[in-house]
Image (cartoon, rainbow over all chains, first blue to last red; front, top):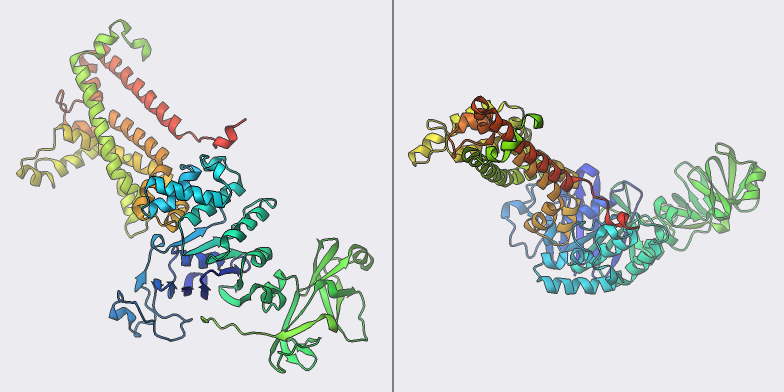
Length: 386
Length: 240
């Protein structure tokens, strides 16, 4: 009972393999334009991929033949409908779908950034739309709709029109509507992005309850969503998966710069040496390598911005790392000032920032104690299913 | 024009037998052509707004052609298509079906000139509505037929209504194509505009009175159309 996809969308340079087990919630994280929404559109059937194959609990959703991500094992079993010609290895670049299931037959519901409630239907009829489309009678569909409205604590809104709802209410109704369709897989595309900052925590709490034990994929760029809602995260960058794993591990030992940024850590990649790592540009970072780091192999060093001290002049002595950097920008961060420079960040107090007379463009030294640096091995994520 | 109306005789003038026959015929044929416009126009607008295929621009140009074509030319085109020796008419006359110079011809002529109004109005509505609601409906398990019936058509209903109203109005005023293709037989093909034109020669009072009736109908039609398509404030904003 799993969902697997291995698909490419040539026009958007997307090449992704993903697997979601029954009852599992996977968060897809990534910067804007990394292909997160494209991935969801492909899974929902709203966008045709140029290659690949997807399966949900043994049902083939689409099969466009071999892909780059294909590991070569033959697709077998239950493919009675496939013609012999389409399955032949002689057509590696075929574009026509050997199999294609339209969105309405996939049992995959999509909750988008905007609720997209049908404006001409009442809240109750909106939620009853899925059951009605599946062939339920009017009374049965309404009964189901009421059940899901209770689930999202919005039964009292049943007779309203979508135009009379606030953003948070509308998104709750949209969630109820998606759940009422009883999808085998629920897709959530930044469901909190369009909401008021005061309303988002309420919806997140609600999502946590309804997503428990439900197979879902949530696209987000909020680390809180990933922590609260997801069992596992996948980091997408430039259309490729650059990192994946259990949420906590990804945030503690980020492999990608994006994940490190989410976790609020500075991250430097390089080659593991006896006392730290050395980057491709020859910069050496000392820090205690953990047991798993292998000498001479790719490694990652992370440290907190709050562990970085900022100096105007070079500093020597004791086991410290010093980087000469040029400040790119300064921004308030809590009760401190976050200084970004050379792809790294440092947090200093307001008085320290004033004393050092820091402005964008000034050259400073970021200094971090070796003890504050963690070094662990970098993992290579091939574009390939597990 | 109202100053020229013979008000004392207004009621008898517009209720004379030829006038009533013309008015009745006009209303019946216009209603029929509006229905025909909807039957042809809804699929056309859907195809033009929702799909992409080679020859789409050509199809759109063909649909819009009657807007810029002189109606008389349209009538001649119809005559050479559906006339006794026409492209399709010759086959139909073998079956004993005679279209030209019949009430059917009036409806066809009116449909020909009125169709673009419905298609343009509806296509605009479809494009404005976008397909995001339709995509949402599909992911909820709705098959295309259900999406069309329960989502697309209700969403574009204001556009469909205003398009139908405009088509009706255009059909009601149709003159050139009707005269060329259907002729002017009292009670069969002589619609109100033809009656007005003929009466102008012999009985200007009737012509002016009937013109005023058409003006009333036109004002009513525009009034209804505008009321239905005026942007409505969201209900939440209208609450105190």
